[in-house]
Image (cartoon, rainbow, N blue to C red; front, side):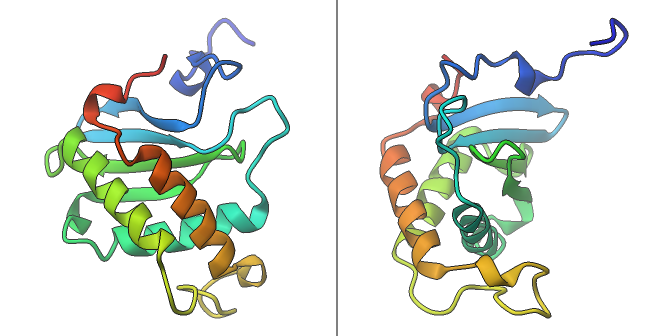
Length: 157
């Protein structure tokens, strides 16, 4: 790596020790980034393309329909396929409130009934691998994992 390039924050986390959970990744001015880690890296235990995509559609839709939607900046998958990033406006939502929002939307997604949001060629460039049952199961598992999480547990270990 070139000496002139700064090592980004996510590369400074020891991924060999990182467990599934909910973490405060970084704060950039008013923008707060949470790391929603589903799988432990370096084990070959990654989210499948269908899991990644289906969770993204369910959670992004629920976040953007929540009463707190004006604080939501972005929700999407990590390139390493081990989880998601949630970015929000820290002026509009505290870390505590963001944790509670995620707990609520993952619980709702874990019980989701109906058709997968955005599952058509018009709405999504890769709609074929979307599966509501796959997304629901992954969201229910994560909802259970973070059910007792609070803002005090957001630090990387």
